[in-house]
Image (cartoon, rainbow, N blue to C red; front, side):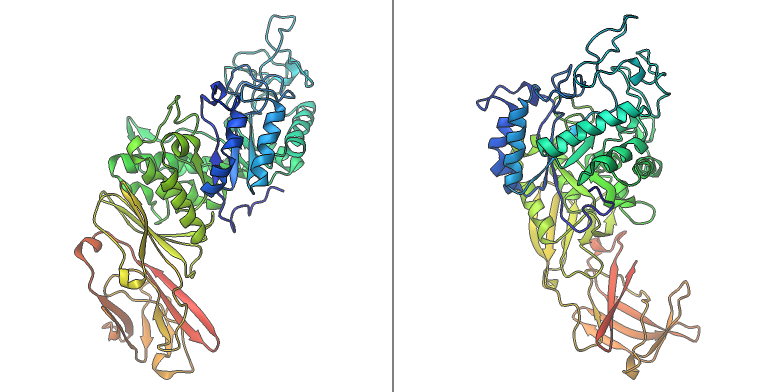
Length: 521
């Protein structure tokens, strides 16, 4: 059953198993479905969890996005039998299968008496009352549309009960007979998310993702830095589904492309210090991607720069949301090994859709972020994008785990969460000098007894404290206003100290429990 919590506690990765020309496949396998079936071992080895199929139904166009007789599942990709055999093979290897469903519009099979192409064929033989009455190209007799209609095919009226009944029946056939467990909703802008929510409630897929492709904000040819309104529109659509659907993160796609193309890595950090895409606003519902059959492939409507594709994958495969991997990049561009390594690291570090990101640098030189499964996990990684010189300290346990053109990933694990002495310990990667930190009371040990003043300056009265850790020093000083505060000093490389943010964690032991206090600077 579709859930608001899908992917939050699991390391899901989606694989798009086709491109715009896959329907024209004429290889030795005979059909595209048979081709994917033969690739099943490699797809499973890649480490993905969901496989996205092209639209399975009869279509006026070979690619499947002009659906006609939707009950007929023989298509240019193969027969219904080949489709089911492919699904079964992938599922036998522990993979889940997602069907691309085109619900917004449908092509008629015959003309109506008035000469319009509004008479539909097959089992679901609707007429012009299944078409919205403000369709820009076809004369419908249904209700007014609830989205942005297309002009290329009749836009379906989802307010009609018979339409909802038939579509629900068809989706259930895909679920229970073919074996699909999830759906993609094509051109979701065409109709209200309320109906998507109704279909998901009625058919209970494990997962659904809507394609809400809306334009970003530009000033002429210049992409504006703030794209909050863009990602809010995606969030509103997900809300309209009653949170039963996810959405592709077109905000991150646009911002990440521009950042990598122009070295404007500051675009990846919003005004609150979080990732600037939809995954920074609602990571549990964001499905990130680099390219798909529309944006890339032979259509190339909005392609990621070829030489920056692996930078893009390094970002989405180490960040919140559910990342998507594209067939072309894995099998045609021969990037499988690099992508597979990043997926492996995502799983090893237990990074889920809701993983935590601390952006420590985002400027015109590089992007640096520390990512962990939660605030106190012992498994963490660092991502660096850009060609500037930077690396975390090797003596802190960081090891280079993946690298390529313009990206590098370091990991560490097994860092202890507490030590018997001293009672305050640092679990952090980099810190700035002279920064006051909040400290909780520890009544059983007088030297560390403190009273927390939660004012804006986070100044505390401290009895006494001194802690040295190699190149780092904690000590107590008077702030000049009758109070004392904790100060921290260390030397950092000049290149690391420019326009950076840092995270410091203190653990305070109370009896048998350890409280963790964090401060991002």
